[in-house]
Image (cartoon, rainbow, N blue to C red; front, top):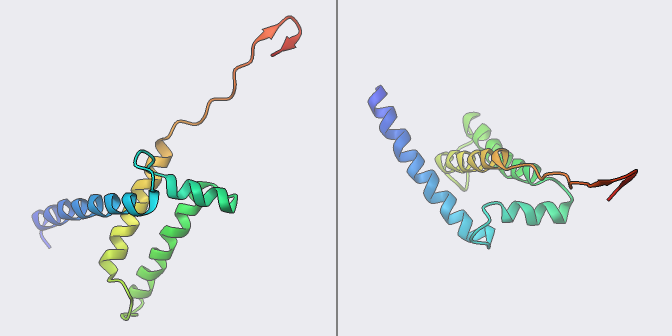
Amino acid sequence: MTQKEMELLINGLFEEVQDMRSAGQKEYAQEEDNAFANFERISGWLKRDKKEVLMVYLMKHVDGICSWINGHKSQREDVTGRIVDCIVYLCLLYGMSQEKEPKPPSYERIGDHVI
């Protein structure tokens, strides 16, 4: 594959990734303004961090890709779909990594007391 062919492939791939992320947002998040709503709901149910929930979803697809690499061909989803899903999950994880950490509550000191 030439460099130009690879560039065109990646441009098309990221259009597909954005389409998949948008479809997933509508299907799973159920909240228009919260890109991570699905992960936050499940993290609450399981008492796990939303990043851990995302990793389970991601690793399911990595496992399928590994099976394909090892010669297993009869999968419900084509390997390219799994690759796109992995990229979407990695983009979401990147977004989670960019979130601001909640600030600890500020305390006021009055004399010897903290309120």
